Image (cartoon, rainbow over the protein chains, first blue to last red):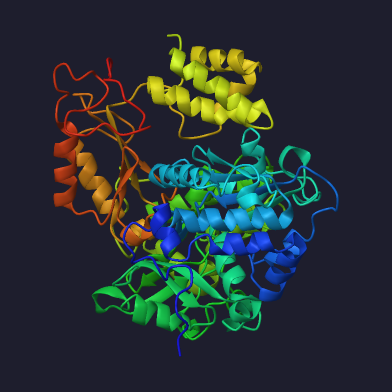
Length: 428
Length: 186
């Protein structure tokens, strides 16, 4: 029997963004229950639940929390709401629909790790969502969930909402911290990891919006309840952002391990315009392409990795038979080139040259050696960049060359895009 | 142009809010852009003064982030996403239509000063409603040529007399949406 949604179960409730309505839907009972527990018990509970970070890397949340050095204070919790992965639009949805669920998760995480100050870093483009969170924080402060001596338990917590200003790189945790400190959002060397030396040089835990949304439910229902859902290594549910060539794009919360086919065909209503599926990308712009033969792979970090891609941020981009894979890769490469922070040479120069080459393919100026040149540039970036942005910029284009090399050849032999006229100047 | 008193007070409050006053730089830049529509060198020097930091630091930070404007734009800004998920659902065609409808190129402002538009490769996070564009911080999703026409018509409404130059008559005042100034030169 399919598992019921967890994070989105009350999303049909009207005015759920209001504190009173959220409380009627059992809101903040998780935080109250958490305050009755010892912080260490909470860390153990989350470890036992098997919750893995939903931001992309899938690192076990409880383990991350336990990396904090003992006795070093202050320490901070930072909620990463800098959602910018192309294909990903669920943080926006989760915040918009239920900002208090996000906030409750943040409060539980803060208490568990012993932080008295939490930050939410939200991308600059999400202004209405920023405002929703701001209102929620004010309501929670008024109700005594944020402030001094919360519910008489002697715990103090404050939450600062911080708005970014348009930089994809700031979703990378160390770049986010640099940005939060007021600098240009460039990544830092790891180690030391943020848990040891993070924001302002203090121990810091960073959790994604979707990750913290799981916490109230885990506290309320227990680790075993959570661990009963999903796969042996991917517990619980995940919100999948479905976009591209499907009939019903949108956010769908499904149990981990649900076949990709179910997401695309049942929830998404199948490929649009009665066309055939050509390829899909299971983790957003960065992730390698998969083919129709992979439709029965489960929506799960490990299963998708085994199939040759990564679940990443949980964004499923579907491409039908009319898609020019070269142009799709070109968009992503241009995106990475635009968003490269410029700190390290392989990424800054590499993404620039990959973008130039892709433009050549679309314009019909590519030469026979250019496919291998692309692979060569990709090889020079991946594993040689300072942070994952550079590495990830090469994964999709290289996987497209692997599976659709003939389309690149066609662009060369036909001196242009066989799928459509060259893109008009207005664009990109 | 010196910053308004309320902006200065806000910047000082921000500095006290964070464990490090430097963290107030980005919020302070937002406050300036909110008041003046864009961020000038002079304004950054003022931020520096109020935060007690070198102005080079404010400029270094500001220039990294694409959302801080350095020059005045139209009263409304329209940003259309052309990244892959939007491209798959016809964003290119919509961008071309938008350009024709507005009669100015990517990055330019219409002659009546109403709209500055540009295409962006930075995903705006609305792939489920692609093709989409952002109109003054609000997402307009599932675009069609007809919808673009309607939106443009709304944005082109002239500023009502005595309504102040900042808020277009057709739009209710929106909190924290950067007030845009009428472009004086082309």
